[in-house]
Each structure stands twice: as C-alpha cells, then as structure tokens.
Length: 232
Image 1 (tube, rainbow, N blue to C red):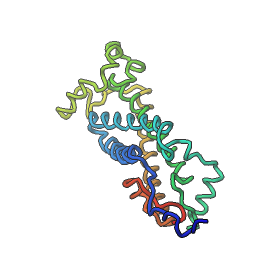
Image 2 (cartoon, rainbow, N blue to C red):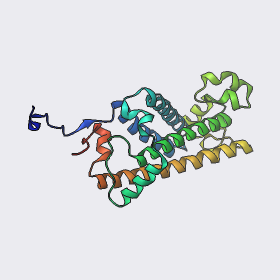
Image 3 (cartoon, rainbow, N blue to C red):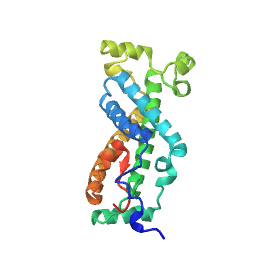
C-alpha cells in the first residue's frame, strides 16, 4: 500500500487561459478604446471597428472549438448560481473558480453581445453615411456604391477626407444632411458604445474586488494564463 506522502506534490499553478483567449482579451480592450476615442478620425475609427468585429467573430468560433475553459459550455450558470455567487462575494465568502465565476460569465456574455451590437450598428451607420463597408450593398441608397460594396471596406472619399482633415461631407467626414434612419442608427451606435464602456468599468471593478476576496490576482492570470489549483 502506497504512502500518501509519496504522492506527487500539487503544482503551484495550472494553465487555465490559452494564448488565444489572452491575446483576444487584451487586443479587444485596446481595439475598443481606440474605436471609442477616435470617433472624430473616421478612418481610424472604422479600422478599429473592423479589428474588434474580427476578434468577436474569432472568439465565437473559439467558444466552440477551443480548450475547456475557453468554451461557452464551460461558463453557463443558472441564474440562482449567479445571485448566490454575488451574495457570497459581497460578504467576502465567494469561492474561487478555475475558469469564469458565475458573475464573470454573465459579464463575458454581456460584453460579447454588446460589442457585437456596436459593430453591427456601426456598419449600418457607415453604409448609410459613407456608402461603404460590408453592409453598403444592403442599406446604401447609392446604386454605384451598392455595386462596389463588396470591395469598399473603406470609403475612398473618406480616406481622402481624413488625410486632408475635412472633406465635402462636412466636419469629421459626415454627411451634411441626415435622414431619420441615419440619426436613429447613429444614436443607437453611440448609446451602445456608452453602455459597453459602463460594462467595462464594472468589469474592471468586479475583477479587482474578486481578486481581493479570493486572494488571486485575476488580471495577472489573464497575462500568464495560470491560476492556483483549487485547494491552494
């Protein structure tokens, strides 16, 4: 009979977040803030939006084919579990989770949905105002733009306008006249961006608070990909 003391010692840390998840997380954060702060530089704003949209699409795929803790099935919790975790968290009694905690999972779902909605509404605005982008062939009122849409990710006129600072479309490269539809999508795009920004700040606050309660540096784990095993 083997002596328990002869068992292999438990490692100080285990791999949790794979490289794709870590790169996605930090690149998405940078891309979002670049897009949010570059509204007046439309060309930069558009390319940052394309980057964010591409990242979200890649993450959606990775959520089905990635390793265990990257898969969506790994962070689906019943509503009661989320409430129970939050209740324990504010009492400094929340247990650690190797992957996403119930509250963290809800935030991930909210951020993915919110950013995806921002990108979608932004593409509609870009198609309506600049007759360019992947959706121009569906929503543009300009026949020539609809024909060129599959190849016009960025409006040539807008690229020239940004290079010169201003253009015929008015300040910041926007049309001087707006239809009701354009105004609706513009306002929706702005509201969604501000809501996601609020979620980001809540996410940061939640991560800091959970790190204190669980005594685990969660931001560092998203850099190294490693966490303490349960029970250590």
